[in-house]
Image (cartoon, rainbow, N blue to C red; front, side):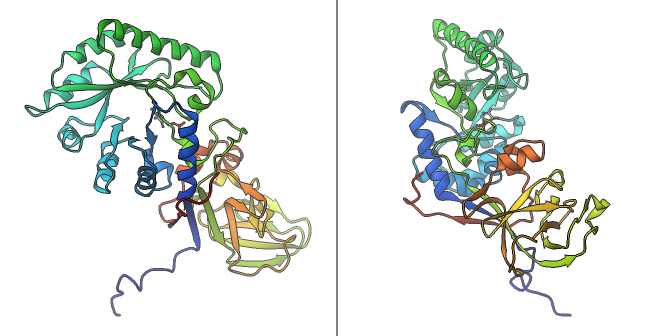
Length: 386
Ligand SMILES: *Cc1c(COP(=O)(O)O)cnc(C)c1O
């Protein structure tokens, strides 16, 4: 048998793909720019491969739009963006091992410190004559990482004495900006108190930031020196069921019909026979399943779009195949494009729609698209104004 060269091995996967419309990400960025005061920095949250959209491509177009701040979960992600030519400021939210400090300094990447323990560990490995940029993470009520706000002033003083660190920022994170205004106000007051104390002592870091996407929309007085939008950049609403004027979803998930046949009434569809046909039914087969990120939770619940029409998913979603009821859409053929998430005619299915059917949130729907699903990109610079 002859060995295949790499070209011959390509192109025979499932006809299921993810489309990212970069022009929409540009448009969403401009909409956000219009929502926040011009002096407030926009820390574009492109962590976790830009919520599944592809961090390099997304950061590159944002940079073209003038974005100069990027936030990531890990140092590796930040280093990856640096080598892809992203020159703006960068902040890593997550924990970084002390071994990463040298690379962070060399590549001018700021790290988060959740307390003075982590800070002194970092400081101890900073090479002589260098300084590491850090942002102090304050827990004002999220209950995740960060120093409790009561202790924050003491920690800030300690950090300020560490000559190997440059305290560039201080930040906190809302736990329910989308749903609980009074709790968010309490978080805001705690953060303001820390900043006030720091100002009095003359150690207020230059960049204070608090708001995520929901905070930007709901708590206008929390912009400080910068905001950290993630979901808004991708065109989704952080508030369930509330569309945001001007934002357009950048991600679509599409596939093609690979088979169909008519089965009689009373015929069981897919594993477990959870769907029984009630009439002669044209059953379509889609080459997509939960391994691709189309959740099994969507079994018998979601619909897909075929030629601008909504068509129900019937039976269980399997690992790599899903069945639909095509009885009401005459004349379709194999190869027909099917939209799992996105738009067709005047119909649309959003990540939020799929999230509520799958008992999760839009964020997870965006992030779980499988590794085997090829990403395709569209970008019409300057066109598509929201
Ligand atoms: C992920 C994240 C964000 C962005 O959240 P969105 O709701 O997507 O805007 C902001 N700040 C921190 C600390 C985060 O972890």
